[in-house]
Amino acid sequence: MGLREYISDISEAVVTIAKGMRITWKYGVDPKEETTIFYPEERMVMPERTRGFLFNDVARCIVCNMCVKQCPIDCITLESIKGADKKNVLTSYKIDMGRCMHCGLCVEICPPKSLVHTDGYEGSSHTREELIVEFVEDDLATIKARIAAHAAELAKAAKAAEAAGKAPAAPANPAGGEKK
Image (cartoon, rainbow, N blue to C red; front, side, top):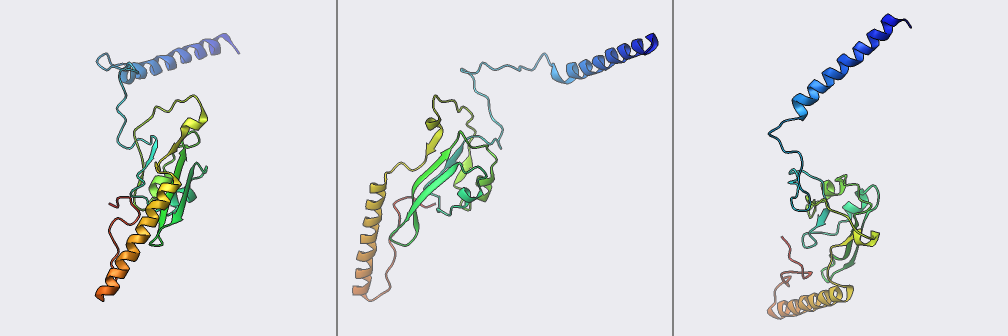
């Protein structure tokens, strides 16, 4: 390698760096634009289609298990029991946010669109157990009592319809949760 090639390489490096810095200065540095936010006091406004934390509206969930089957890393678990009207009633719905990779496959496959991404992004915690989010507030005994009450309502409606001589009508609000 001669002196001429050495100087040529140095000049090429200087020109390349100058081009890169010109582009950076042109697009990356705007004195009118603020690039820093003061995080604890100010929060970022997330874009509309942000894949933040998952949220399941259990009142709309039809317990189809599609989200559990679609999740590639098995971070969603749900449990259900048969209700008085032979429909599944959700007893437990958990998402391990520490394992979730926010791919959005579960959200896309959900038929009633009860599972959605929120714009939440602050997920720090002291233990891994805090990252497991439970969406069903009631315990199993409360859910079973609600199903038993619904079964009693169905039986009462069937007896009343039989006495009146017409087909039994199902009472509204079958599993205790609001259906939208």
